[in-house]
Length: 307
Ligand SMILES: [Zn+2]
Image 1 (cartoon, rainbow, N blue to C red):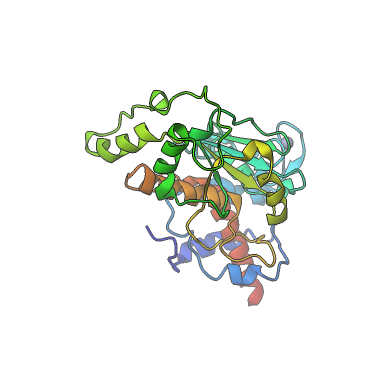
Image 2: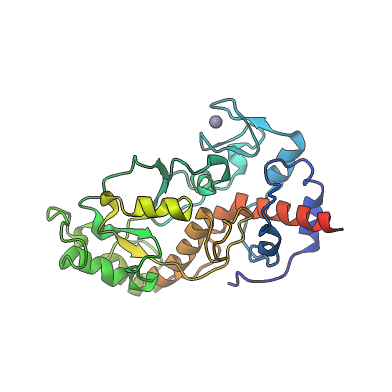
């Protein structure tokens, strides 16, 4: 599946033209925005109908059912959709592992895409606000952290690295809890089709990655979190290089510096293909349900502004 298709359908263009005036909060003045919107890698996604998102801005901002704040689409403090966006019209994405997102307290809630993950995969996603983070002691053989550090490995290397962590206690995890459950005991038997029992079973049995940790913050804040002693010894994964489509891209950062929801999405696509060894057929595309919609709004507003 290509993420770099430059094709944008005319229907999409038309559908979103009328919305730009009503849509508050996305009118970024970031000078980088225009260049970020040249390519459209989000066009070929398998998405649930976005009519609910097209409808909502026409009614203006709506109330959060929990805190009563006035919001567009969803409340970024309570992680719930607003009243004009019924939960039943938002897709639910089933993920193959748990996702913990560690958010820096200074990260502006309204600008973060981490909440998209919580809204779309509420069962598997948990958002923590630093310094309140879980203690992963004793679970390090089944957890990985997405971070492009000097010791980070690619997704292909996860099985071997986790295996090493549970058996040999290599690398920086000398303090690994020896009472941790043996990895074989944690292996989950998949009941998938017979044809893909082979390698999938092998990987699952040998290295069951159960949880993946993402950090949601600016680059400088990330460095503070990453050095927290509770995160030491976790396997660090570096994602394949991809360009961001985020309209609030951080100034001075390369285009490969992804927003949190993009990082989660691309990780899962690669994990599915390279770790689970299964064919990717858009299973996680709806994680970009909000992101791709907002992206199109901005894109269309920008192009209309040039006329
Ligand atoms: Zn709220």
